[in-house]
Amino acid sequence: MMFDISMGVAKDQPELKAAIDRQLMLKAWKIRAVLKDYGVPVVDEVGSSQSPSGQPRSP
Image 1: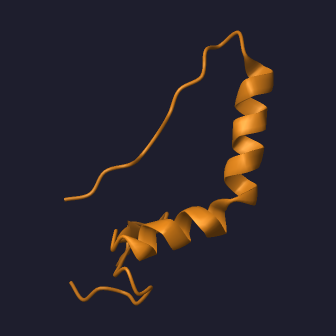
Image 2 (image 1 turned 90 degrees about the vertical axis):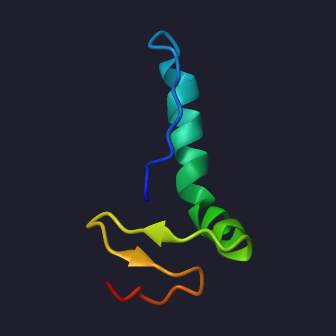
């Protein structure tokens, strides 16, 4: 089972959206580290899953 994580920002707050996007890009490494620490497998943009250790999962 896999699913995306998302969040929403009101359309009338483009500055907030830009600020959140900037922080997500700047802190992406830290977010991935937290996911790894908690054993959350991640899926890359192509849909290949990786184990929490960062190694590709076998199908």
